[in-house]
Length: 96
Image (cartoon, rainbow, N blue to C red; front, side, top):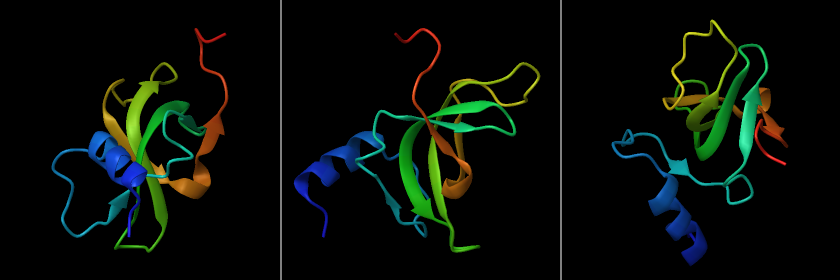
């Protein structure tokens, strides 16, 4: 059963048109945080979590906010990856 805080975060952060067979949830400890996927140099603003029905692994998803030059992912696009391969990014350019 979700708490009221979880339901509010869910309504705000879960993307529209989620697949009906995937249970998307929001990890309140990650809301507002940035995650980095170092192999591609992608910086993602956390938005939601889900367990893949294909491999049973936990994934984090959100919006790409920065990337290395030459990486073929658009800033502002939705993206997700295995949670174990993403690291919390403490500081992003332009932040003090």
